[in-house]
Image 1 (spheres, helix red, strand yellow):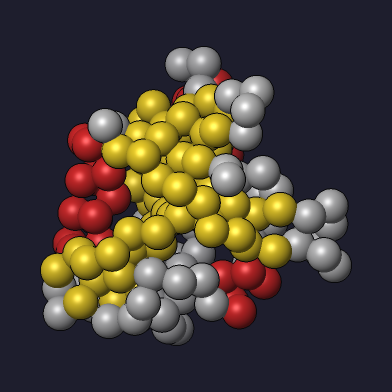
Image 2 (spheres, rainbow, N blue to C red; image 1 turned 90 degrees about the vertical axis):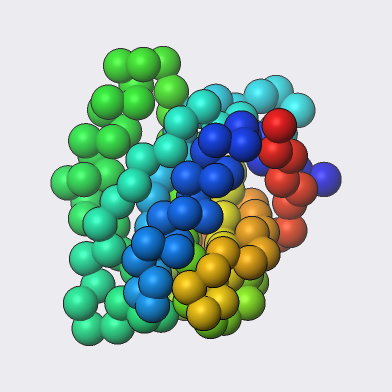
Length: 146
């Protein structure tokens, strides 16, 4: 099964971000490296602003200019984008049809934290697999925090 590995610090930062933006969704980027065995290793996270003003409580969007800057800065440190994270305020940590429709980074992880009444609850991760937009899917993956 695919796996995402991250430090306690990065895991806590993702969950804290969700609590801080509650009742709106938070969003951000996971940077690190891809291992040959399908494991993605997070070495840093980058908070992003949620540019969705119409429905920020249940949608998110990362400004493309911000994403390009994060990708460029990561490359300078030898990191790649290995995934994304966002929160689900008062909703389960499961992907939605919208999450799947808006996921385009094949081979990356999509981490979702449910934030219940302002407190981070469950954090799950899903890998985007498939060969193109027509057969893409999000599959459960293990999260190892150390």
